[in-house]
Image (cartoon, rainbow, N blue to C red; front, side, top):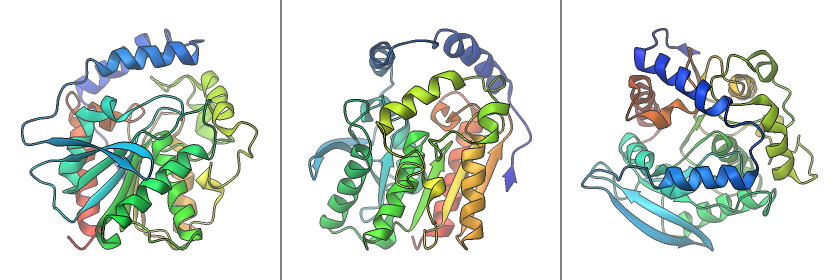
Length: 305
């Protein structure tokens, strides 16, 4: 497990801001209110830099954006699965970030608008992720140059998708990255309880309703919903990143333990005092940019490019 020991002044200020703005005002908001807040945030997302292209596509019935930068290699593809507790989120909200992932991976990034709960419960998001993966394969992509990444719920979805691909006999990605992944919708991780107060961003009391909305009665320990409960044998090299005091820390730690026990090539990084999915804050936080450099390093050593 690789650890990071220093925390910047900007990170300390960000933690305080999150605690004031999100943990207090985020309590008891309805899904409609949360979506309205995210819609307002979308309008504030800065455009990507010059040299970035964004093309809208239909990936086997799943809408998405293909994002390329000057660093993107034509034959290299990364499927990105956004976070949002399976309830909110969209490619447009991630336009400040997907170009950075494209640069880090030197890939053409497909970020999809997978269907959201509670209107579209499990396994809708998984079905859409697999459909998008099949679309990339149908387009002639070489699995040896295909990657998957995601944050939060999207990180868990990336891991679940790989289990599904393996079980269905489909080509797996060459490598995977999961940032603050949500791997256990049964919410049994010790950190879910132990870090409830320390986490500057996520409200532990809110998480069960998001899990219930996505599961809609399905078993929380179904590996395609909670990859922690699956058999990870045969999965590709995987990087897991999490913050030390987020409630989902042990979702990453236990997933790494399970993968390591199964003989997988897995790297776990727990970054001290980083908030949930801090990598998305690359415009502000030096730790976020450092995490992206770690992602670039991992993908470089895990693939043939």
